[in-house]
Length: 86
Image 1 (cartoon, rainbow, N blue to C red):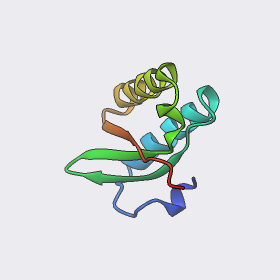
Image 2 (tube, helix red, strand yellow):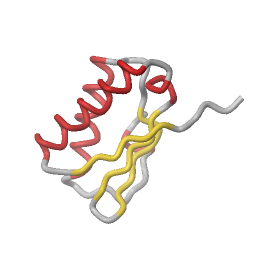
Image 3 (cartoon, rainbow, N blue to C red):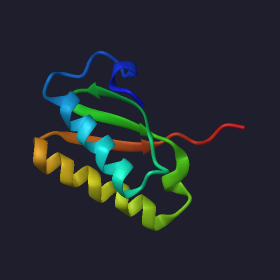
Image 4 (tube, rainbow, N blue to C red):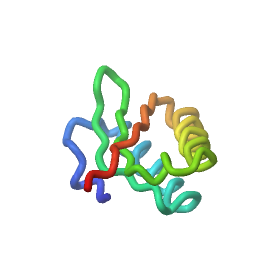
């Protein structure tokens, strides 16, 4: 997802963190995509597609990558899965 499509409330410091997370996901687990990201009380909520829920190892990788980005950018990411709707 393009950052242009994300909600406008991300700060100048939060936007690069989300982009770095998106890039790391694309490199490591390309099936997992960011659907949306927005900040609530200084926490960046990151909606992910449900590909990470299908495999526990992928889910662990998603969380590990978010922790790496948090450390790098000094932000708090809260990735969560949006179930696939039929």
